[in-house]
Length: 53
Image (cartoon, rainbow, N blue to C red; front, side, top):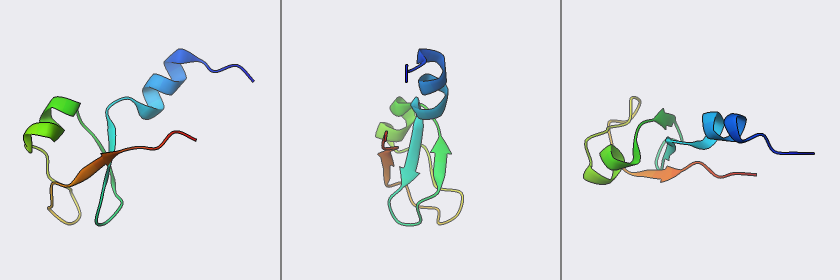
């Protein structure tokens, strides 16, 4: 099955997961690295990128 570039960008680009409550947040990587984004559920700012399967 072929991978469509637009679909993978929409699903995985700029999507991060909170390390404590596993909520998905869509934000730019610059804001994540600078610590400007907080989780909506637990108010922490520890994120990891979404895993591609």
